[in-house]
Length: 259
Image (cartoon, rainbow, N blue to C red; front, side, top):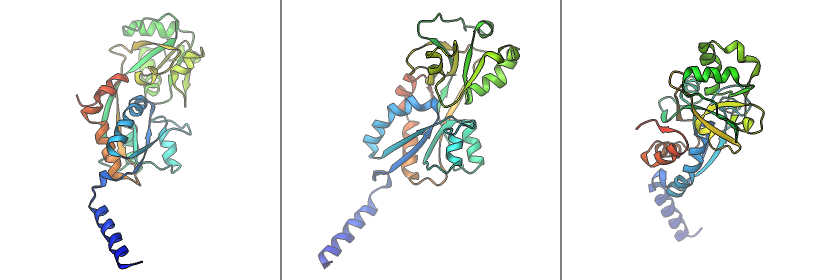
C-alpha cells in the first residue's frame, strides 16, 4: 500500500466516523403483532427512503404459545431490533429481559371489531344487550388467540354470563387472521382488532364492540435486547410515533396513542 493510498484510507475512515449514526444505512429487524401490521407496511417505504435504512419484518401474535408468536420467536433467539405488540405483552418481555427497559413507546390505540362473511346479514351489536343476543344466536364464533381474544374469552363472555353457552361453538384462531376464517365460511361471526379485520377480502366489517363491552388496547414499540442496530431502531420508533404517521395510522383503523 502506497503512502497516498494509506492517507486516503485514513481520510475516508475519519469522514465515516464523523457521519451521524442515523445517516448510515442499517438493517432493522422488526417483529410486529397483527394490530399494527397494516399501518407499518404502509409507513415503511417512506421511512426507508428518508432514513436510508432497510427494514425486515416478521409477524406474530402479541401473546400465546403459537410458534410464530413474538414471545416464542424471541425465546428461540430470533434476532430483532424492534418489537411492536400490545403494551401488557411488551411489559412482560421487558420483565423477562427480552426488551430493553425504558425503551417502550406507545404508538396506537386499538379497538375490537366484528366481521361476517361478505354479503351476509350484519347482526346488531350497537349495544351490550344486542351484542349478547348476537353471540347467543350465532351458529359459530371465531376470535383471536392474542390480546383481543384473551379479553373476550376470559373477561367479556363471562361478564355477559354466556361463556358456558357459547363455548361449544367458539373457536380460538392462532397464526391466521380471524376475518380469513370467516371469509371461508368456517365461522359465522369473528372478532379481532379492527385494524386486523379491515384488510381481509371476503369479509364485511360490521363495526366496533359497543361501549360497555369494548376494550382499548395500546400497541407499543420497544428496543429488543441485543439489538444489532439500536440507533436505527430508535429512529424508526420516533418516526412511527410522530405526527407524520398519523394519517396512515387512522386509515388502518387505529388511533395515535398521543393525539
